Length: 232
Image (tube, rainbow, N blue to C red; front, side):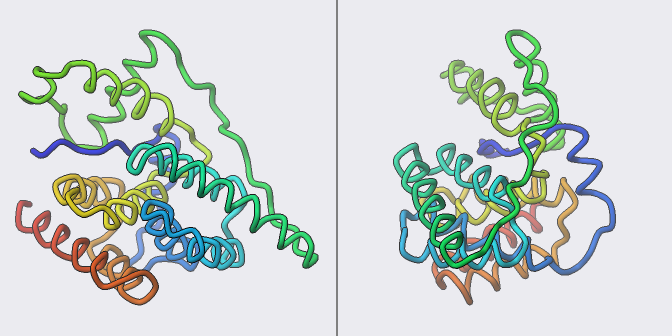
């Protein structure tokens, strides 16, 4: 199995996102896709438009913040910080137009610390991936294994104010913007299926990428989905 990039949430979120499966993405879910892609690519002008449209589609300020904080796990702190600055700009501009966006919620459950954080992160990673994640890479660099399990799987994505499906839609969209991350993109197509997104919904994700972001992004996502389906 290729090394998965991090993306997950707690058990409460999983039960929520697996209820009521559908073959189509909601308007809110579709709005996440260009936000993730443009933020990871560092395309701030187009990100601003995508954020404006996403808030119109029902994203809360908290939803948008969670997505843009998550960007740093895939594209680094500079692009995450720039994207969050653009969200502030968009929010302020909307307020001047008389639009009051729902603030959303902070995480409802406390994030564990110490050994409990490692245990929680390991459990989240295993549940999302469908099996324990191990391999020569992690034996070679055990520090990255611990960072994945504690900081990412056990800290950031344990934040339960954004459900797992939303986090995976964001992750796949971010990775589609990063040439050279095809292995991680394929892994996250599998994780997306594990958290209840259907193949039809993931094909719709690639269509949204083609229509609203770019053909290169869509091609990478379509190829990753095809490889993941063939592997299954």
